[in-house]
Length: 109
Image (cartoon, rainbow, N blue to C red; front, side, top):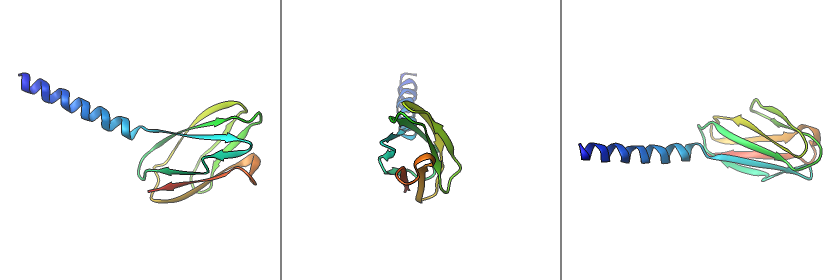
């Protein structure tokens, strides 16, 4: 019985570590009407929780070029969007309200 309990506990530790690795959160910052980082590495085949923090006083709309997401983030606030799962490749995004400066890209591997 002791061996069975130890094995079950070991399985739970491994399963918890795997789940935590799969649930990594990613963060984008909007500052001075630009995204930081401009390029972000993401894993292929995973649903991604993306927290976007807008440090500007004005609102910005996060929009994907080749993936379906649009989200307005008011000034001085945060929002969460879910993206993916993506196939390997490059996926551009922009800030709809500041298209000339607010651009970025996900590099999916």
